[in-house]
Image 1 (cartoon, rainbow, N blue to C red):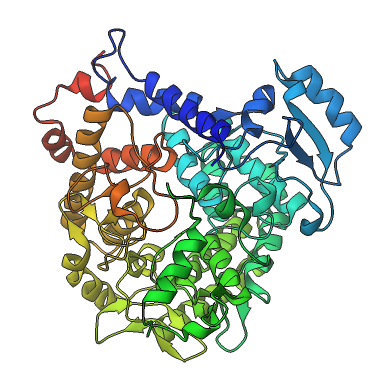
Image 2: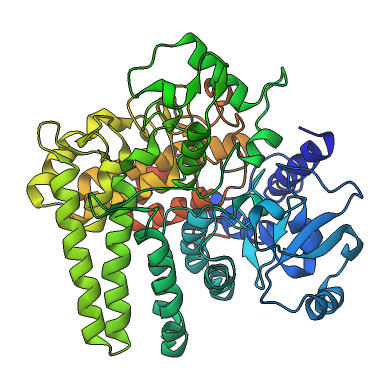
Length: 539
């Protein structure tokens, strides 16, 4: 990784940490205050576009400026003059360029223009991400930052209209893929605060366009009528080659080749993904690798080593999210008085729910698994996505009860681990992630398992709070077995850092805390003053 890239990443982390230390530099601020204050630290806008354009995962163009690409629908000259007037400083640090129609024609990787302010996750993630932003929106709304939350959803709609979909994030190397779809949830979150029917009506065409992205080939698999993750790009992911490098200078792809050389793989036909004679990864491996990144779970062994086989699966998470999108699109159309169209969406949801329960439910193990449509079987790989159908309301009470009986597979001292397999991947054991904790807790509550939901919330919140008081920041992910955030040596593949900030952990912490009964909140706070937590009325 170039030295300038390391400095940018370090400066972002240091700014976040400095924001929460007291005047003497000793103790972190109360955690709820830290979370509320950090939203401004993590906010990017066109006023500070040069800061947004800097990419901790990459490097500037040879002349030292960071490219910023503008979609062809925009007037480049008009926008250049507008930004020159808006930017407080650093206009000479960026270079505005028209975005070519073909991704392969992008000469230098750069930022994709968005019209509104947004919140970045933190650390090496200095752009607006897809599913991160839904959880960040939750936190912004909770902390009274409605305008910024709405700006982020308006950026989602802008991406769909100008870049064809909600992007993995607004960088050129993400133009070939999206991320898990939370669009209608994000839209309804704003509508519940604004009751703006005109704005809601204007979102419908974007919802329909984004839904088609997920429900037409190549994302649609006609043999099942369900969807899969599928990146349209080819070859190595540029951001991996640029930034996922170990101390010996080996890229993540070098480590993957070493793994294929030294391991006998039975999860799938490894010859599809690794050419042993030439000692190289195949084009299909890179297709799978990119598609795994569209899933957001990058990486795990959920679809075999490095999830290389993901393109042959209908994932339970994606199809549960599409079920939610269908039911919520019906709600939106009902709010707009379009009842006949709403019923079409409800029928789509009913059909999808039936297919999920038919193909993905494994009664022998009491879990939902991903369906391999090529081999016509589920993959027995316990993963927290088994809670998605509970969260979505797809499961029957009997199915939910069986899933809940499997809580010991996942539950550890610091909450729920992503899977029960320790693979060296960050989305497997022993790691836990805020969005999956929240989804599982919401699924438990939906089926009446309040005691279990509160217990898991307390486990996760207690761990996050202890680590915050130790280090002065919230982290991207945690080792929930040891209940700690210091975990880089345990990660063998992908990037090995644990980023500070951190958008979705901030949001989920407040959401889980707010949802606890008062008695559980007191238990969590025991041994700490209410002032140290940043509770209302204690300053």
